[in-house]
Length: 120
Image (spheres, rainbow, N blue to C red):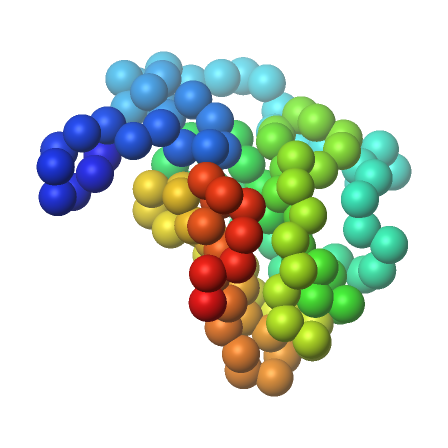
């Protein structure tokens, strides 16, 4: 929901937020076996689940790469580039329209997930 206008905003990460807000749940396991997920070539150093829909996972690696995954898929939806150092922290915005990454050097980066580009 856009706080300024009150208009619903669809998250690019999934439509499950409507079902979750209505109180329904799924019995499907959200876990992807590590041996089946393909995307990172480096060690994963951070992981975060989307807060609204629960249908997206972001992973960061030791070479500043960030991958966005849809639950149940074995290939990433998108690949983003953080800074120059290992990603140490990831956090989705409450509306899932942005993701922030922090690296082990203290830098913070913001990505617009509607455009899949870095904004800061």
